Image (cartoon, rainbow, N blue to C red):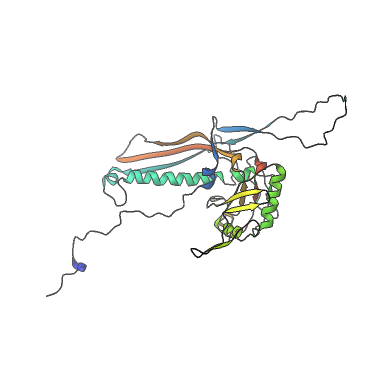
Length: 317
């Protein structure tokens, strides 16, 4: 008699794990590391100032008092950007029992929230110019980090920083070296800055881990590990955290230029300003479907760009 095997059995339950595996990156080091402030208009403004140059300040006895011309503060501003995500699924889909989640709607909303946060990180680190929008082109855009830094920039041939929320000019790409990084750190120090964060893409994180100055490599004999990476860079001007970031120019420029910049940041000199904080809305139902709409309106506040710097136009492979 033939053995009744599973190959011909009808009704065997599908073996589907009750977990959904998703390795898409969700870390947002910049947005998570800077402060949060409140915007009250679509043009968010702030002021910067600087001390006068040092002088040989020695006065004679009985000298006549002189009064210098006082320089006013400088007013800067950035436009708020609206970012959103929407979810719609049929009522039947929500009622169906699915593996890995109790509610398909809740799962899709949580997934979209992570996607929204990644989009915001990309915008904040972009080289996209600030745009006010108008009746013909109603989409406002914030100027990303790279549109603000101009004082302490090491750029490839033909490249430069623009500042003021304008697109910087790309130059010829070159390899990331420790000399380039040190030159920017010197410029930041001379400008009065105290950067505490270096953000790079994966390729240049590996390059930075090969820098010799300020690095320590040791053999952890107890568990046979050789530590060869740098997560903290000890410079002549202070200790800086090194953070790999997947979203530097993540949606701006050609593929070869994604992640081509090393950002040397004083994190306290930036903040994300919210005109409208994250909100989840339930639009009026017009069909046999469940709908959710997430929206946030925000901008980048670059409090004083001279505190930070960039090494731009780097090779990425």
